[in-house]
Amino acid sequence: MLKWKKFGTTKTVPRAGHPVKLSNQGRRVLFREVTKNPMVSLTELQSSSVEMGEPSRRTTISAALHQ
Image 1 (cartoon, rainbow, N blue to C red):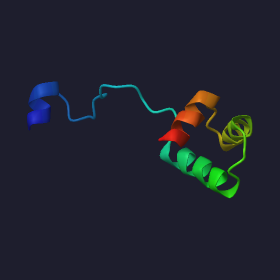
Image 2: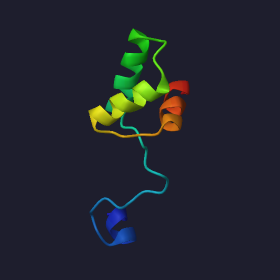
Image 3: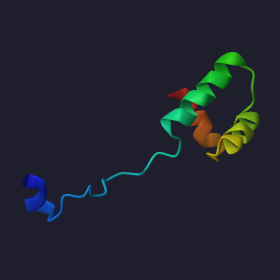
């Protein structure tokens, strides 16, 4: 009821904040690759993310790994 009174609809409304660039599945795949080969370069990880269907920058991959 509160949602209907506030927004006038029962549909999900957009939330505040920037959407994530890497999905949880993509992040898990990157972690798996890094645990298999810790010396893999960011460029190689970037090319594998493009093959996976989630193109992302080297800085995005680096930030995900540092989390």
